[in-house]
Image (cartoon, rainbow, N blue to C red; front, side, top):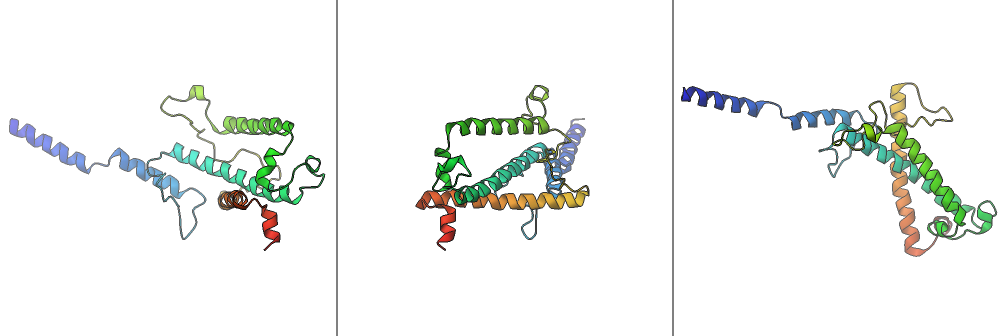
Length: 211
């Protein structure tokens, strides 16, 4: 009898060793989800050198993509702000010609009322984004903080005043990839602008004119 029980236990252990683990299943599911994400282009494909996706679930990956899109959009506006702000400095177009010099110093020169307007605008935008994409915190399980809505596409806030969003899914995917690529480039450009102006105190437009 003891021999039969031991053999059964051994068989069960051996079978368990060949059974797919939950981690393996999870990794396969995440890989399938990642493969469907826009923004992966040849020859690099899905670029994740630090392995953030390895231990992430689908909701975490959606939050990563939401964060990337948001930072990319802010960076695109920042790059535009660098160039426009320095180009029109000294004119009455903005702040009655009170702001001048490298763009990284402009924020210190604007009137105090601008700060209140800026904070209100950012707060309103973030409130709208949170209500659009996130599940109400009161309805989220304790072990799933920051849960995005199941039907929410990261970055798709419904803001399309020019009607540019394609109805065809494949064309929409291509447009998403274009936005991601432009946002990634803008993040690098904005970081470069900040570093360059911090190093020598000259504006980006001034650098262009001296080339």
